[in-house]
Length: 477
Image 1 (spheres, rainbow, N blue to C red):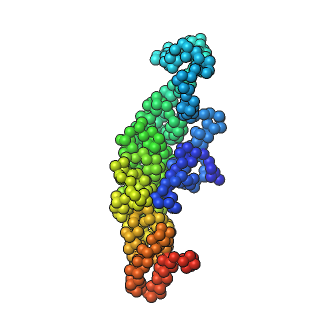
Image 2 (spheres, rainbow, N blue to C red):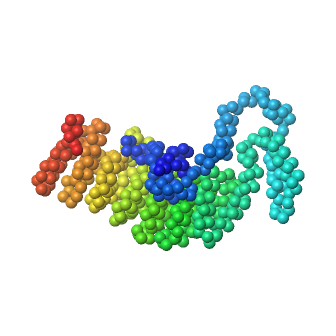
Image 3 (cartoon, helix red, strand yellow):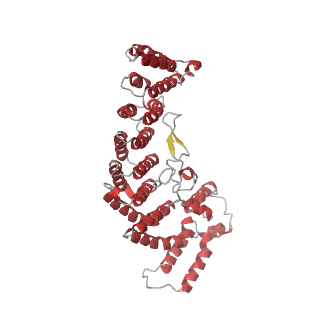
């Protein structure tokens, strides 16, 4: 069993994943759950050792390699913290020599590096660089490396020399008709992307990758069941990773195209879209929402897609889409328009959120009424917090009590739990008077409940939920 195996783009180590908090009002908190840590292309709960199992960060750690960006960040922080005063004299011998000579070391070293690059990497492949010249260049770089200012120069030989052949290798492999080779190339691409590419390398690789992903996903989106499943999963993982970590390099057109094809895939029937691909796409879309790399138009299209998927007959797919719908709702709630004036009560839902939530909450009540018992249990568990986050109390009490007393409600025990938690929330926020008012207004409706035993049971649950006594509230099962 591999519970803590390292995976691609491990969130808890580099960028904690925000998630919906059941304890606070619409808050996004960091957590260490499995859902968004696992590789997008891997099936949840699958403990088999497969391609892409070990992250690049684990490989670096095992070989004592410091990522380039970390070196740059560390140097930047040191520069910010240890900048000497303009009038203070240079302390190190190197700084002293630079200060006396007035030489622009950066410009000179940059000129030498560009010249050395031309010598070592000639434009004509048939022209071989003399070994003696290569030896002298390496020796010269060794001498001047301590004068280099930026960390990117330290690996110019390896980076520029390797990037071009790797790009050609990946391009030729992705065009191969041999499917295992293409799958292996995509796994290699995930590793390369995870290295936080330098700008020059990104300009070479990302156009090749994005063009491949768009053309291939567009061709299989309508009928993924007849194509290689692993190939589609790795393509989706690479596409999501590009949008999440390289949004400026791929551009909005790439993001919009991927979102559109994801909608096509998850909207297909159970036969046309296998379950593993369905869950992979939904997890990837959730990651994009939480990373805030989607435009407003794309986010709105995902809200509509998730609500549509929550209404499907398959309970497993509906519950998976429920997670995407909640993520859409809460991430939209967290984004406050710059033109919006802060309210006196920051916890009060704004009118736009209420209008949007009103259109969606009926989907949750319908799922309790029409779904299987385990679906109703899941929805009833999240519904009280959802109502508290998006609605003023006076807007939800009528709906909650009406569903609880409805003769068409097949799961009154779950709705009783919702009533109890909503009342307890009102008590804890000092709104017990509102609970009493709704109890008085609703008493006459209990007489219409049939049979009489059900009416007595409902009334007992109602009074226990409304009580402010801890002893009476403890009687609730």
